[in-house]
Amino acid sequence: MYTIKNSDIAKRYNVSNSTVTRWISLAEEGKNNLQLYKVKGKVRILDNAYNHAEIARLVQEGKKYRSNIVCKRVSAQKELYDLLSEEDIIDIIRDIEQRKTINSKYAYIGEGAKLWDQAFSLDLRQSSSETVRLIQELTGFLFYTMALKPEEPINIVDLGSGNGMAIKPIIQKLMEERVIKKYIALDISKQVTQITRQNISRSFPSLEILTYQRDFEKSNFTKIILENKAIDDVPNLIFHLGNILCQYKDRVRVLKNIQNGMSAEDLLVIDFLLDNEDNYFNLAYSKSDLVNKLHLWIPRMLGIDVTKCEQKIESEPKFGFNIKYLILDKDYEISFDLFGKRRVFELFSGEKLILWKRNLLTLETFLDEADRADLQVVNLSIEKNGNSALAICRIKTT
Ligand SMILES: C[S@@+](CC[C@H](N)C(=O)[O-])C[C@H]1O[C@@H](n2cnc3c(N)ncnc32)[C@H](O)[C@@H]1O
Image 1 (cartoon, protein in one colour):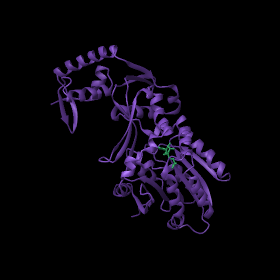
Image 2 (cartoon, protein in one colour):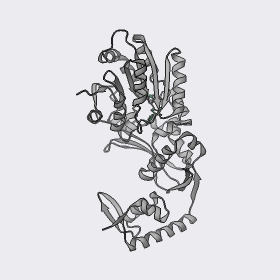
Image 3 (cartoon, protein in one colour):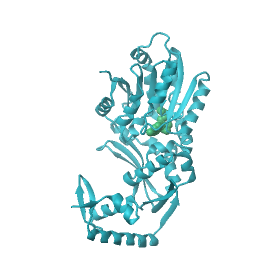
Image 4 (cartoon, helix red, strand yellow):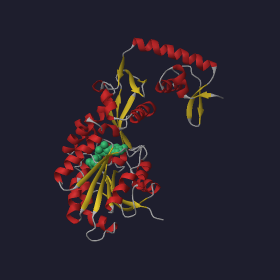
């Protein structure tokens, strides 16, 4: 039994991958006549004359349908090309086509950095001050575990620095007890690192600050961390705060990317939200106006009329996540200029476009994933309110 790949159909009939996926869904509901076959859990279209005739009919029907209904044809805004690499843009298109998702990490780029800065200034994240307090309490333990010699300085590495306001009181506390040689901030957003630099240098004018743009999901940053270690010859205290771990598609990969840059004397301090009732049903943070603006900013750049789309936030305790999505108000044809070629993809009225997904973790899940990333958890604390956990890890030694 031969089947045809969705991408081959898309190419041959000059339609988008999402159109083919949609035809398959409609066929499963009995709304067209395509003959399907399941291969390794995936539903595919059978490669036979009957199906090719049906596809040709669907293409014609699509054209007629499109000319009769409202379809907004837009081009991605120029600013997007200035802010993102072509690789990132392809990533966004692929995520939308395959998972109907816009990865929320892109929200912090460009204007998003300012929106986050404003949102954080209002201190919407109830848990942040509690995390900071916990880390301040654990300072002695951190130094003891790093086996620091008296007077031995450290570097602070801040992964996903935001506007730097979360780490500020932690630097303050660490500085009371140790010399900090460098503060090194890494973030996917260049604009975020600029805000971090301003805020940190205002508070600590004599502290050396380095900033780098990196996507932790895609690349490891071993070179940056080890290069600085070679220059300074001091241990790194690495922070990954703000429950960023809960947003990743592949957490083990990101943890492994971090682990790759660590040496035996370094520690990683990381927080994450727990799988508890409060986190499923207290969604004030993601519903707030500023955070909402942040989540809507990439869809706006793509030309989606976000104010006309219905917006929903749902909790899925059975599957361990919260999700925010838009229900599209009409069909869209969005075109991009990539590598000198025009690429168009379609979205359909009523489709859900996910803007934000937050995974809530059990302690067992975290411990298992840390272990798979070759990290040893030396301390695991739960915050007073019971909503998030803070882990201190070092690299596993054999
Ligand atoms: C929720 S904020 C947290 C900021 C800060 N750590 C805090 O606790 O306030 C998330 C930060 O992580 C960055 N970020 C998100 N995903 C990222 C990724 N894949 N790679 C690098 N940075 C990322 C964002 O740009 C943003 O600055």
